Length: 141
Length: 141
Image (cartoon, rainbow over the protein chains, first blue to last red):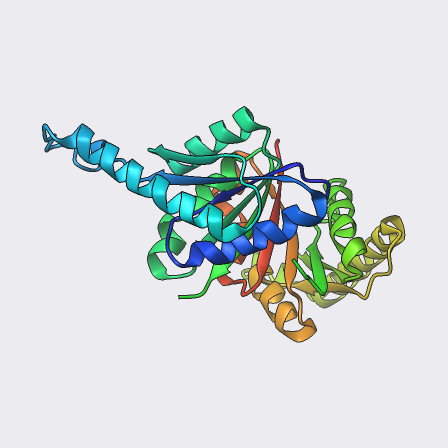
C-alpha cells in the first residue's frame, strides 16, 4: 500500500470534502504527498459554433475561481497539499498527464450513480487509461 | 480510511496475486477482515439454446475447482481470510449482495485495459452499483 503521492480529483461540490477526508486518511499514516486537481469545463469545446471574443477571459476567470475554491479545500484538508492543479479539457487525458508528470501512484475520485453519470462518467474513461490505482468513492444520488 | 472488511474480487489468473498483495497491504495495518470472491461463468446463461443434462454437474465441478484455487490464493496471502466465496451469474449483482451480507466496506478489483474490457468491463457495472469504496487496480495488456 506504500503510496507516495496521492491525487484527488475534485469537482468542487460539497462531495469534494468526502474525497479530501478519505485521501487525507490514506496519506497521513504513509506520510504521502497529496495533491488536488480540478478539470474545468472547456468552453471552447462546448460551444464550437459560437466562439465569443470574451471566451478566453471567461475561461481565465473561471479557472481563477476554481483555483480559489481549491485553496479553500486545501485549508479544509488540514494536511500539506503539494500541488493544486486546475486544468481544462478532457478529464481522463489531463489526469493521466498529471500522473506521469508528478509521479502520482493513487488517484481518488468520486462516482455519481445517477442515470447520466452511469452513461457518461469520466471516471470510467479514467479507469481505461490510468496506469496507477484508482479509488472510486460512490455518491448515491 | 478505517476499513473493517475488505473484499477482493479475483478472476483466479496470475493477476489475482497482485490484487491479493494490495489487499493484504491495506488490511494488515488496519487489522481488517479480508475475504475473497470469485464469480464463475454461469453456463446456464451462456448457452440458453443448448441445455445439456450434465450442466448442473459441470457447473458444480467448475465451482469446486474455483474453490480450490481460491484456497491456494488464501494460503498465498499469508493473512487470515474470513470468507472465500464462489458465486455464479452477474458479477456486479453478486458482489453487491455480498457487500450487504458481510458488511464489506472496500472492494478491491482489477481492470484490464484491452479493447474488450474497455467496452464490456464488469468493473464498470460494479462502479455503478457498489455502495462502498472501490479500489481499481489497472492491468495494462
